[in-house]
Length: 525
Image 1 (cartoon, rainbow, N blue to C red):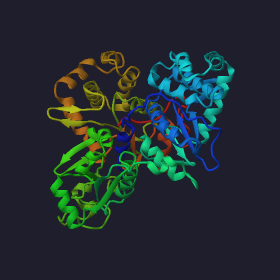
Image 2 (image 1 turned 120 degrees about the horizontal axis):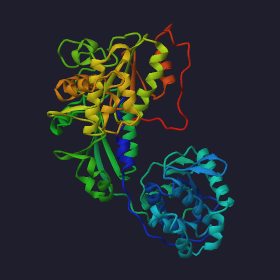
Image 3 (image 1 turned 30 degrees about the vertical axis):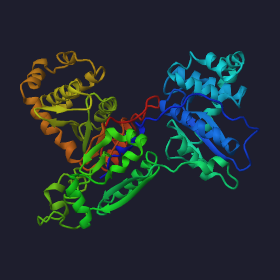
């Protein structure tokens, strides 16, 4: 069972301090032993902007000992036409900054950092920032608005693609991915460590990072906890460069005592002690993810391994109830212990998740292809909360989950309920759901009574247990034959995964619609 990597959400959400514009030390070129540093960014990505700001003082101090390269992540849809995550203004910003570098390589970072001050207005501050950086504004305009700028961006995009840079910022130091901290001292430390031979004086004056200690409580019985814990430690070093971690295993007396004392439930668990206050900036970046646990603060990372429950594949009675592995009631619904049911197809979705909507749209073609030869089930991802329910997209999604379940309950023959779902998917945010009933044979009154009369809530309460049983939180997630999990939003992916598990199934000889290259796959979590 794969564990969610929610710690990635933490790292992507971190905020860094900004620095004001200033001058980059002018040099005749990099030293022979200069370390090559590559930044791949998007000019309007806040995280790219922030690392540009914090690396600048490090470049000032190290001068010729750093061979610095700045390139841009963008897609060239056809020659001279570009698409960027933050829209046309970002494309224009990328081009202007590349032109500044071409015209004045010793001053272009001044221009970039000036634009960073108001990066959301990057198309408006170009001339002002050129003047402030001492760059010929007329030459910059000629380059940025002409073919030369497009050529520069095309070349830059190719370098980013060659480096396999997809997220902003992607940072390479001496050709290796950089995953350290993003403060100036962090960059200084990393660059100096990579310089071979003679180093500048600045390398001898870098203050050590604040010391922060943590406990990593893990369980050696959990096969997937080890790799997860290793990645957590690696990425936490980017938040707390002075981090020191003590690892404790749950199966030891010390581990069990700590588990009981702190009241945590799932492993692996990262417990920061009071020394976290030694690094105020790092603490600020993770504060919203910290939960008090006695003398510690637990960092929320989305762990799901319960060390007190039966482990379903180790041949041991972990709970002492005389039941081993799949014999234990708590393991019955795990993927490992679930019964193989040929031809069964489950999908787990949120009714207002755009990726879930695409997955259900794809089912029209899938159902038509197999012509009643598969047993299809829709399961919704939500949770019971008090007298109601909680879903990622709020109460409107809860209500729509219920309406769709009502349609499934009352119009199951030949998947008639799909007429309602496919209609709703065309405008799933619109609360006028009644327009998808009536003429298609699905009665408005039937859905309304089910929704408001308590039946729908009972259906949803029972339905969401399926997702909870297999620990599914991402919409869409598929299950072939009741136990084989896969992902995808197109008909061909569904057909292939189902047919891989069902040899000879009629319909497997066909090829269905594959992924749409114009739209990105994904999931709601």
